[in-house]
Image (cartoon, rainbow, N blue to C red; front, side):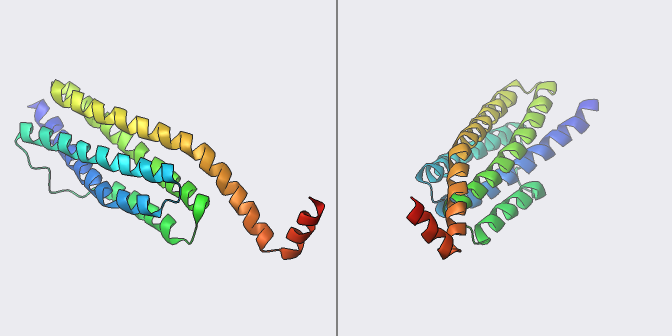
Length: 183
């Protein structure tokens, strides 16, 4: 059957997403704890709750397919999570760290949007309209999260630029004194 190979690919990609979402369940609390911005921390916490819902939707799809969601590790998400961890370990603080966290989170969101978009198309072709609906709901939430991160980035990146400028002045006390006298 021609559908059988596409169904296998569909299930394989769903397993990849299941692994990705479960990796995020572990990473998001760490990102929330590292964030200095209350708004960013709240955003990560909200997305953690959404991610739990994403896992539940995937579990519902697996149950209807009579398949196990386990058995695959999403290496793409593992790499993205590792990059996010590196941002937290690089010694950045305040808004600069927050800017790095947003960049890492947006890469994750784009990865997820691409993956959910692909499996959603598989579901449609395979006649799995209920699956497609569940996957589209998750895709919409991922897009919304990315948009919120983008809006937050504008403010936080500006703050990070200011913090960076202040840090440079702090490393040159004579310049700072001159600027204070001039003001």
